[in-house]
Structure formats: structure tokens, C-alpha cells
Length: 544
Image (cartoon, rainbow, N blue to C red):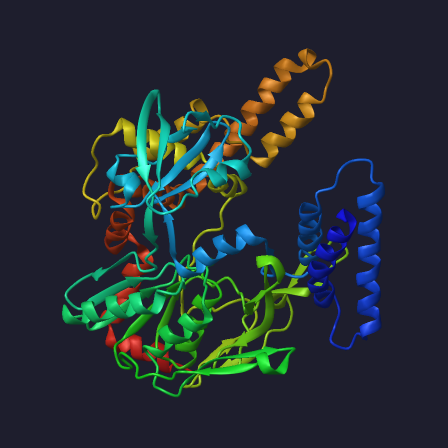
């Protein structure tokens, strides 16, 4: 009985894998053959393997390992993951208004969202939940920790929280959390509006429209639309937002798929909000997918000046497909093309070298296309802005630092050591503050290590009689530390901005961060200059 259950479960799920692995031309016999091989193998394992086998876990791993060979956007979700993915798309969930990460102590609060339950109860970023209903979370597995705060709406939970050296007891009641994809909008001056869109969830177009209309009421005559760090999301929402600024009937994007019925041309189907207002769109290397659809469409119609860095280059479209037993598959079904015919996909997942590395389209021959006004634009490798604002290439130490928790830890200490700072719009992270940060890395947060430091420590610890090399060890570690601090110092301007952002969120929430950007962000300030200079704005869009 158990073996039949295993066989049926694996057979149903594995069909999805096999059909992903074969082209449409593969004959049915070959497909059936591979299914039978896998189910036979699984049956033998379940009967004869020395230890008990978890069929769901083994099958899930097999599926995910198979999909890894395709692209990073094609994913399998079990029943629990389906719910989490739905929350991401819809922007609503039951919770306490926090983002978290995990370490050996328990659940660390990464950010507190203004006005929600955790904020009302006085919790702060940097607090650590160490007990849940008197159950210690110390050294608990990450998967177990991730389940702790998933409770039904209006459910109370009792938590023990560590704040530096203080123990706090708090009861939180879960509530409906709505993630607003437009966390901030305002007038920079009497004429220039600013709207930031952080994701393309199901509320994206309605929130952008709401912000736009309110700014128009206040007298907005120019608009800066910020898509930096926006990873994308709903294709439909990208179409709707593009339609706000393009005439009805405009072709916004075309998708081309292997399955003919999945190839479509998406046009602006509604009356636009405003086809005349001078518009700048901000992008960077983390603007992807739906962000690139909007930026590409507005660029191809010469409807907006694009500023910033080259975008990420994700020209692939995914679709969710329901599987059996509540599971789901998200798979890449097509590539999208901008109105001029560009595919901006950067990585060519169908071509890998012998080491499994993915090639880049932009490393080969790129093709030129023309916008409505005849300006030359190119495919492959994202959307190239009309006004490129370069940032210095980051050192290896800086990239490692950003991935670590050192900046978060420093900003948390800074918050508790400085009861007040200047107003959000005026705050700057000074050179003296940066020196204090460097000192913090050398004396307090000594966990952060570069790749070179980790390699050396691994080699040193592998030597059996390391006492003979203690003196040399100290000298080399001092050299590596000095090099690390030197590399980080080279990126002082960039890192000061990152640290400043972390500090501002702790004092003034996300709202304060964007208030500061309006007066300090060099890309926003450049966009304001272009919008103020009508001749320059027109020349950029008409230049051939």
C-alpha cells in the first residue's frame, strides 16, 4: 500500500518535470519511458533502501534540482510555498508589520513598518525574538523559525524580546498587512512631482494612479517616476502603468513563446492619464522585468527621458501553472520585446560553458533599433538610460560588506547611542561618522570577513601545530584587515549613502528615507534639472 502511494505521488509530480525537459518534437514514447524509469527507481528505493525515505522531500528536491538547469525564474512550489508566493503577488498578508532575518539567537527584526502592530507595541529594528510562548528559539533551524510568526488574523502571540542587554515581554495580535507598492510620493518643488514604485504587485497601477492624481491637484507639471531597485512583478500592471502615459492603442510589449497561443501583443486599452506631462524615469542595475517593460515602452515612444544606470536585463515572462495536490509551477513561457522590437534579456540560459556558467547576450553582437523619433537604441543587456549616471565600480570588500549584516548592526548601535538626529530631509552621514564606522568594523563587528580573510583563516586552521605560526598569523591578519579597510574607504561616498539609508529608516521609517532623497539624491537632482530645462529635455528625446 505504501509503495503504491509513493508511486502515484511521484508519477503525478514527475510528469511536470519530464515535459519541461523535452521539446515539443519529442515523441510520447520517450516521455513515457523516462517517467517509467523514474517511478521504477523510486519504487526500488522505497522498498529496499536501508533507512526510511521521505517521499515528499525526495521528490521536491528532484524537481528543484531539475529546474535549476533551466533558469532562476522557473520554480516549483509546494502547498505552503504557494501561499507565500500568493502573498508576494497580492501584497497582502496576516502579520505584525515587520521584516525579519534569522540567526542563532532567534528572529531578528530587520525593519518595523510604521503604524502596524509591532510599531504600536514599541518594537525596534535590531530587537531579537528569543522566545515564542516560552519556547526558546536559540539555535533553532531556519525553516522552523520561519513558521513561528505565521498565524491566523487576530491571533495573539506572547514573545520574549532581547534589546541589547534588556529583556522585554510583549503580546502581539496579528492583523491584515497591506504592502503599498508606492511607499512615498510628494512635490519636490511647486511644479515637480516624485513617485516611487517599489514593486509591481496587484495594487501597483491603482496606487500610482492615486499618487499621480493627488500630485496633479497640488499643481504638478513635471514628474519623476522612480523605478530603481524595483525587481518587477505583474506584466498586467506594467501594461496598465505604461498606458497612463501612452495613447490608447499604443503597442506596449510583445511576447513570443514556443506555444503559439501564449504569444501576445499587449496594447494600451484605456484612456491615458496624461500623454503630455514631461516625464523622467529613474532606473538602476536592480530595475528588472516589469520595470524594464515600462522604461522600454516609454523610451521607444520618446515619451520619457530615462536616467540612471543600465537596468538588470530580464526579458523573460513567467506564468503560474497549477499542479496536483495544491502545488504549483512558475515557469518561463516567453520572451518580451519592447515596441521597437528589442529583447533586453542579458543572460542566455540556453547556452552554458563547460563549467555551467551562463553567457551574456551583451558580450556578443547587439542589434540596433530606432525609437519613434529615430533615436538609436540597442537590445541585449537591459535598458540603457538616455542620461547615464555612472557610479564607481565597487571593491570586493565593499560588495562583501553589503552582503553582511555589519551595516545593519552598526546602524542599530548608532540608533541607541544617538537619541536624536537632524530632520529627515537634512540628515547627512558625515566623514566623522564614517571614521566611526571603520573603527566599529575593526573593534566591534569583527565577524565580517572578506573572501581573502576567510581563505586565510581556513588555511591557517588546517595546520595542526598552528602555535608555530601564531606570530605570522597575526601579521598576515593585520595586513588583510588593513587592505579591507582601505578598499572600504575607497567606496566611502557610496557606503555613506547605504549607511545613511539604514539609519534614516530606524528614526523616520521609509518615509524619512525618501524625504532625504528628494534633497540629497544626485540622480533625482539631475532629473529635476532636466525637467526644468525644457530645451534640453526636448533635445534628448528628438536627438538622432
